[in-house]
Every structure is written in structure tokens, then in C-alpha cells.
Image (cartoon, rainbow, N blue to C red; front, side, top):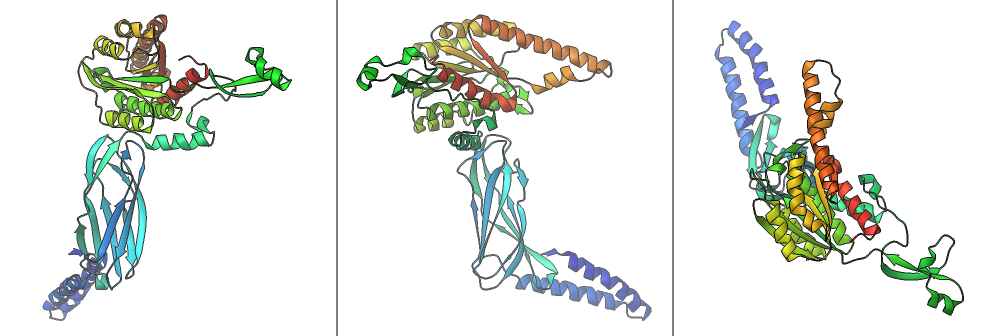
Length: 435
């Protein structure tokens, strides 16, 4: 039994009653008053609904997305014969950020009420909801009856799969620019024949189909579409360099989100997608294939990836990949390069593949470095911070120069912009028929 504010207010009213009774020579009147109040609260507690007639159902997506708000819907149904007034609180995993999981509900017999709240998981992995807690208001409003319903339910937290839905919706509406993805709408790009149309001023004369023009008696040009069945090979480094954080999130998590977005974009474009994960050795390898099922395989392979405090071996990983995949592809490596020395080591491993494939290294920049460099020089510690930030940024620029000299494309983006920048690069490659 949990006393309500009304109960304590009634107890407070008993204090002046007791003072008056003491003056009148009846000191036990207050004790009698308090005892009667407690007995009344206990009696109403026993008369309150037990909760066995309440049915609670929790609905949410099969998997939740990390670091974004996910909707949870709670449905309450009164299967009993009496109205019930209660406060309901649903308990998600303790590490989740929660908004609006407690509501005041009144249910008539046979009625149902739904409400939604939001949870934001911080880390990928598995956990479970702890149950649903009810505080049923007893008659007279002197007490609550607290009930715990056994609604424990497992939940899986994956990378940001909600972003894939947003991408698909905006793509269908032609509004990908809203999430920072740039895509050309120029016609005639690509190398796969699509259709014939009448020549228009400004068309490339090399696209004129002379045989069709002779048949129709007017100039006709060929239209081309972007090639399908090309290959995108994604490589993810899970060594110590990916343990660093950018905006409070580990770089491996940023890389996994961008990996899924690129996979979805490539599968939607009809291309083959493969995956290789490596640390000190090759951990996972999925040869490139096309189709939605391949997207699911990649998702299952990366959803639980964690960086480890080990030195990764890119030479071993690239040799493994080179022996198993020969076809020219867009080869994307998620890793981090702090200086020119590490860039040279990676170039030695990645360089031979760059001669066959279109190679790209994707990195997450740290916004705090730029903030420290741009901060006003108000005191000596600020000067030291700017000097340190300048040195670190210079090292990263030198690493980029080493990659560019070796013919390896380099993409370094802010944490929230990595996915969009990477997909924009992929679309540009497709539109220019570079693979």
C-alpha cells in the first residue's frame, strides 16, 4: 500500500484535532482518528482492483535503432466489470533514454487505451524490457495499490535502420538533398542501353543511332542508363583506431551506420554488395551478391561489431580479399588515419588493390579538433589547445596527401555527414561510369 497525498493531508488535519482534544482532556482522540484513517486506507486497498483484469500489450519494431528515438506503443485493456483509475509506467532497459513512459489512465469496463512513448538506445546489442508497473487508485483516494505486470520482453538494438526508411521515402519523392545526398539527374549517363528517342539540339552526335535514323527518316539517339550488377565491396577495420570517439560516439558505430546506408543504396540500385571485417585477422567475409536478402546478411554481420584494443593487420586483410575477389569494384574501407606513417602502412596494403579497383578510404573527423582550432585565444591554455589541434589536423592532412598520391580516394566527413557523403560519392561513381 502506497499512501497518497490525500492521505497525508488527512493526517495533517488530525494534528489540530489532537491539539484541541488534548486541551479538552481527551488525548486519545487523535490516536483514534489516525487509527480510523489507517484502517480506512487499508480497507480501500483491499477493495481496490487486483490488476488481473488488465491486459497490457507492448508494440515496437522487430529491432530498435541505436542513438535515435524509437516509438514504443503500449496498449491497455480493461477486461473486468468495473472502471479503474491508475498510473501506468513502462520500464525499458535502464541504459535507454526515455521520454513519456508514464501516463495517467482511466479505463471503463471493456475499453482499451493506447499511448506511445519514445526510447533512445545508446549502444547496439540485446536487452529486455523490465515490465509494466501500475499504481491503481483505491476508493476514497487514500492509497495506491502498486502492481507489477510480468511484461518482460527481449529487444534487439541494431545500427540506425530507421535512416534506411527515411532514405527510401525521400528517394521515392526525389528529396534526397534533404539528408545531404547529392545526385545528378542528367540523362544519357551510363553505358547500358535503355531506349531510343528523337534527336534534340545539344545531344552528343556520338549517340546517334544511324540505322534507326535511316529507318525512321529522322535523327534518333540512344539513351543510356546507369549500369546495374556492378560491385561494391565494403571493408571495416575493427582495430584500436576505431575505438576513438567523435561527438561522444565511437567511430566504429559511425562506420557501421554508413556501411548500412551504402549497402542499402547499392542494393536499391541493383548492384552487388560484399563485406569484409578485419582486425588482427579476417573476422567475417561475405562475397558480393545482389538483392534484399544480401542487405539482410550484411546487417546481421555488422550489427554487433565492436572495435577492440588490438593493432589491425590491413596487409593480411587485403591479401585475403585480393585472392577471393578479382572483379573491378568500388572498394570502400572504413578506418582511421592519424598521421602520414599510418597512411603509408595502409597504402602498402591497399595500393595493389587500388590498381584494379576504385579504392576509397572513409574516415570520421572529430569536430572537437576544429572547435579547438577556431576557439578564441583568451588565455594561455587556449593557445596550447589551438597549437595541439593544429598539429593533429596537419597530421591528418598529410595522411590524406599520402592517400591521394597513391591513387586512393579519401573521404573524411563530420560524424553526422559521413553516410550522406559516402552515398553521394557512390552515386557520382555510378553516374560517371567509373566502375
